[in-house]
Amino acid sequence: MTTQKIYQLPVEVTDWKFDGATEIAFNWEYDAGSSDLLNLYEKGKQQQWDTSTRLDWSQELFEENPMGMGDETIPIYGTPFWDKMTEKERNWLRFNLQCHSICQFMHGEQGALIATAKIVNTVADMNARSTPHPSEDEARTSKVKR
Image 1 (cartoon, one colour):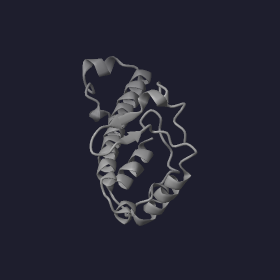
Image 2 (cartoon, rainbow, N blue to C red):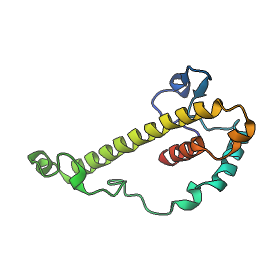
Image 3 (cartoon, rainbow, N blue to C red):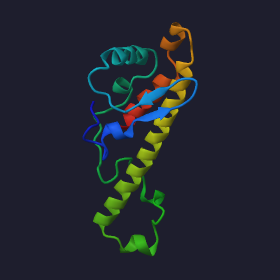
Image 4 (cartoon, rainbow, N blue to C red):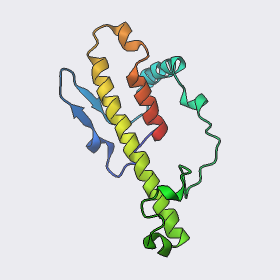
């Protein structure tokens, strides 16, 4: 799945490189050219949890409240500011606060993916690299958040 039309900046500008005993580079682009890696990822999912079978993707998403959270979770709920807002403004605020939360969570997952990838890259034994490990789990969680 390409991310070219999702981000404000071109993917090339957002590449991340991390110094250390190993160099790990991410560009968050999952397009063609990585079929071998995706096949390995699919095999790894069979030994852990698979987002395509464990999550019910047929459920309807309510755009005004994607996470299905109560308004009590909004910091200004019950204040004079909240009372003055129209339903359209409340929907906009609810949606954007939830998007912000999901984005923060996703970036945390991406950070965890980077950390676990650096650990995996230091393992000398190829068999140890190919067994299920936290980097696969972090990659899968990041995929779900996209």
